[in-house]
Image (cartoon, rainbow, N blue to C red):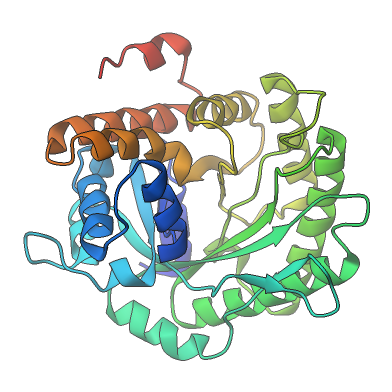
Length: 338
């Protein structure tokens, strides 16, 4: 498959992307929250349980991996990328080295990881990865994000995307406007608009083929501490309006990040966006916590009950798959009995 075909497959209707690319530090926090030791063996056991579930065939188009997992072997002796491919899903890889303090700033961040990226991409391709991910983060306050932060991150995202395409892989472009703070939904709309405009300006400057990319943005939401909450309808309308205005139509699809939403909120909001979608974009999901959290809690209580853990994960994946086609509803959600 060429990169345009891979990108289309990643955002195909009824399916979405499982973000299982948590760094060891992030996994330590997640496992600590369920009182499980963050050992390499435990990290692999949990992830392999998800990757060998039924919903990998029916609801998951791709899996973003952390470098450690890309190089691991499953219990059956095959590599993790091979296990993912067997289900008809695509293996991908997180390639950035994390958000670090932006020079000259007290709190804003720029994502690092461009040094040596070309060589790493060659290795990842040989290991089976067919797409990559790079995340930039922007916080909202009275001063932030600054023009420096917006421009620095857009430039890095574009350089990353160009190198990934050179390696015959699809770049997921992830500019995340964080939910942290008391900002309004209007603030989120304005900041996300500025971020997207700058990102696509840089992507075009770096001659990135937009048909061979996938955008992974935040939905337009009020800050987690904002007193004025927003309805599902308003979130969907503002998100659609923002993306219609600022994302070029060549982009085949948009895979939303969950960004601190609960499992149900992330599913419900995606469903509503698809109900009113009048664009050429396929709207899908690229969720981490919003796909894994219930399964993680079940796994922590009964690690050896693989079928039970997979049943919980399969349900969440199925619900999100339904929301990519605007087929999710409360009745469907409640049809699951753990």
